[in-house]
Image (tube, rainbow, N blue to C red; front, side):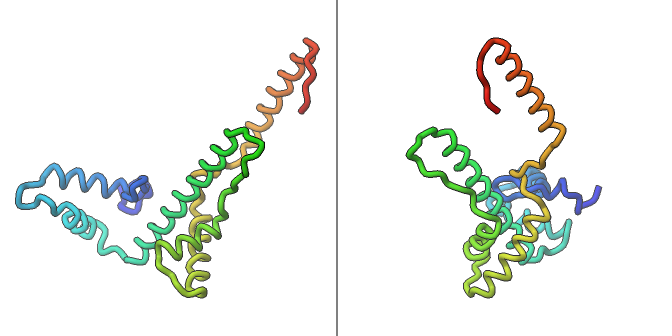
Length: 168
């Protein structure tokens, strides 16, 4: 069991990892009146004891990547909700590109102000985001596509037997 195991570093929606949640549960179970309200400091001490001092840059980058994932998910949900509204007059919105999200995260999360700083930071965020993959992107499954196409064709054939015209 290694501390570097990715299972322990899975990030929850609130930005905490599995390891942090487990440690916090232990800390909360052993809180006294003297240590009440010091959970954050105790958690930081426990994390430092287990894995050493954390680099601030790494934590900031993780926050920026989490920001990008949340905004990506929000964009995808907005597009899907827009598609459910079958109004002809409604405008269609599109998801922002990874580059746009990286630029936004560089400015809002990491506090980059100059154009050069934003560009360099956004490029690093883009590369990291793409290397890790987005949990909201689905890889193509060619077998599944073929099975779905065959099922649709069978339905169309059945409908054609009953005189119902179909178009693919």
